[in-house]
Amino acid sequence: MVNGTGETEASASSPLQSLRGRLRRLYYGTDNRALRFQLTIGAIDLIVILFFLAGPYLNPGGSYLVIDYAIAAIIACELVARALVAESLRRFLLRPMTLVDLLILATLLAPQHLSNFAFLRALRIWSFSQSRVFEVITTRLGCRRYSDVLRACIAFVTFLFLISGFVYTTFFYRDAGIDGFVDALYFTVATITTTGFGDITLPGTLGKLTSIVTMIFGVSLFVRLAQTIVRPYKVTYPCPHCGLSRHDADAVHCKACGHILAIPDEGL
Image (cartoon, rainbow, N blue to C red):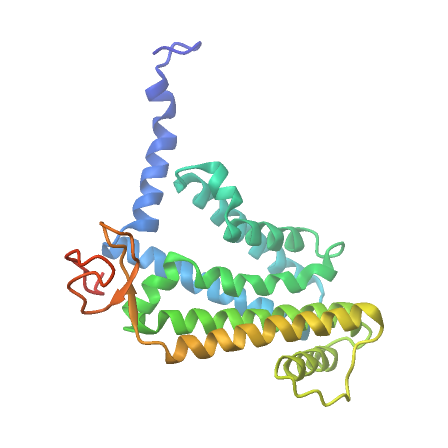
């Protein structure tokens, strides 16, 4: 079909389709080039996470803002790349990982106005654990059998820093620097473990509600972590007949329907 400028639609869209094809091969491929790309993305993500965790200890001056905007540019480029490789743009925008990155991007682009929401950057830790890069790294390091345990640990640590960040920005913002953040982290750990020393408490109704939410979700995540550690190792492989997705690593038949399975090994 010819468009208004006399070019065919195929030729007009070919550069974009070519770019999408290259990005898909890099994001989802298993060759050495794709693996190097995925590991590079993983390394960048880890550096970004370390910067976020070190945020309370850094001086928010000019250099900090330069790094802040540089990370915003990296996350924005990654979002665009992931949107290009997505099969459906609508489903991509509604994915939890996308919403997390959009929230983090907003705090990076407007640090002066959204500084009270900077604690949301801790969600980047959880976002990384849900990515394909995390699977690639655990597989290359020979830790794939512990991926569920690692994800449970990361979810617990994410919640810990998320609540600590909220407590810090809401109740300890007058105690700038390491002292205020340590107090917030100390309160969070004491609340999650239900130790309840009582030397640090949060005032008012909001403080009580924060403590309640921290105890309920913190204990739930801790129990989930314990269950994951003691649970026998399973692999994720949907049975083509009944759909059961969790099987023993050496399973030959599906326990639910008896269908013959062909579970691949863990090599990439």
